Length: 387
Image 1: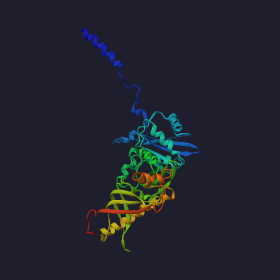
Image 2 (image 1 turned 180 degrees about the horizontal axis):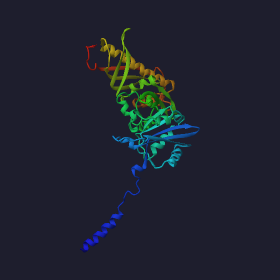
Image 3 (image 1 turned 90 degrees about the vertical axis):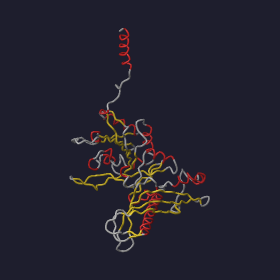
Image 4 (image 1 turned 30 degrees about the vertical axis):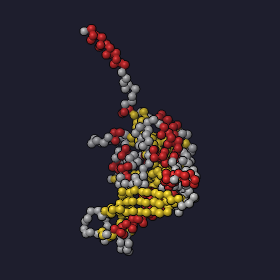
């Protein structure tokens, strides 16, 4: 009995020594940042925060009523941090940064090294991560952040929040996160391609046309700022120059006056770039691209030889077009400087200037397209492909 009388008060006393969660903020009492947009105007940074409604993220059969899927806050400042602190003053709850999905830069915010302190801010902040996606645009930052995904889906599953979903079906643009960005800017050629986003009105619902974001090309970013944008069809060659491409397409014109166009899916892509040291001052590159092809709808009789020939011509054409568009803005769009750096650093040191080797239209010696297996797809009417 005496022992129990001693143990019980001691037990109660120890309970008060235990740490608790009294200083923790409850999840429902925080705002969650999904995206950050950065613009630059009148010598000030303009920061846009997209705050998402988690009632919209956790979809249920019960409608969420008139609750907005997101709100966008805005403030400006001489630095990004100053603008963010201004936004803190207008927020009703604590703002949590740990769920941020992407950064969206305007063209003005990417000029003249203005993006470097912004990137540095989000790299250093303890709540953010290196897997934040990075995009560029010429459209209004606010308009892009306020666009609701197709079928009013959750913003966390939009193409900007999760671009991997889109690239599974077509890898027109290779997504880039903060980690990729840091590596690209710190290694030869100290340039990196980031996805270019624009707003389109090619979707409709019962109320009429709706706006939707689309990947419309690439922007070439260096440590000195944005060099320019390669848009639409001029950017198609970029997808054939990296192994991360899951699937792409080429549309080819079959021989003959009455022959139709044919769209071919290309997948299982691998790329090999070999630097060739011709002499002490001349460097050329051989590019080997291996793909498999799958045919879609077509009519008439075609041969695998004709298909291979047309695929080779079209892919080679697209690779050269994108490369030449990069040369117009003095950009090493395929990072050929890095290939030389990895294989022959002695030669790279001899000819490089600011981490990049001089490139011309003659720097690509050969582009060899190897089309492996050609899958004719599902047989329907008659056998229409021959060897």
